[in-house]
Image (cartoon, rainbow, N blue to C red; front, side, top):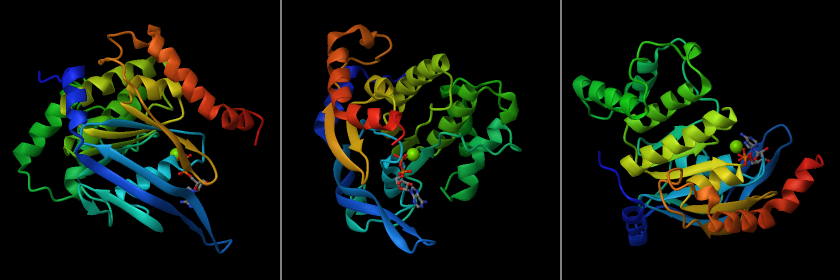
Length: 280
Ligand code: ADP
Ligand code: MG
């Protein structure tokens, strides 16, 4: 198997080929009933380079999903710019694929038919044989061989999300956008899923933007972590995570660097986290 080592990966990111470039991005929503505009993100400047795994960390409502929506073209900039692969984003495209918190599987479709869906919605110029081969490869990659004919209700949360990941990856997008994909999965399975996602991404070398509100999940997965504050969402700080990969094999949680970065992030988020805990 073509596994990139941690070192190759950091050499890759050291080449710094920008894939997602947000400059002074301000964006939000029109609230029709109240006839006003809600600014969700203000003046976001962030570059994600090819092969990089960037986590967005921040409290609920700070604009994390909005940022991913701006990358995928569901919302368009009010001010500033959002470019993907060198061109302004004007709408969704097959170069970007999403993994959702609630899996977003079609309950009446089998595992195999769920993974086939993107190929039915978007013309990708692949033959039926090529599509079948893709589906088989990604089913294998997420360790779901033998479950092709199962329905979502027959699967655990972790397995459902593996279907969601396979569906996103099967189109071989440049960018994987993951919106709290493991938030609904129990704690033990969640660690296993994090470890699997890291393994998969080391193999496929996708560029990943991963949303979480778990500090540990962000440190466990990210090459960099963008900490976002609320109302309106702004980037507080972007931190580098220089821990060896695969992180689970290296038991990074026991390293002093892990505790250091955890403490730095906690210092950045604690005010908002504590006010959130008091119901603000
Ligand atoms: P997060 O993902 O960090 O929880 P969101 O990006 O979903 O935050 O939301 C940012 C802000 O934008 C919040 O105040 C939220 O209520 C508002 N918002 C999100 N989606 C919509 C929408 N479709 N219409 C109106 N307001 C929205
Ligand atoms: Mg969200």
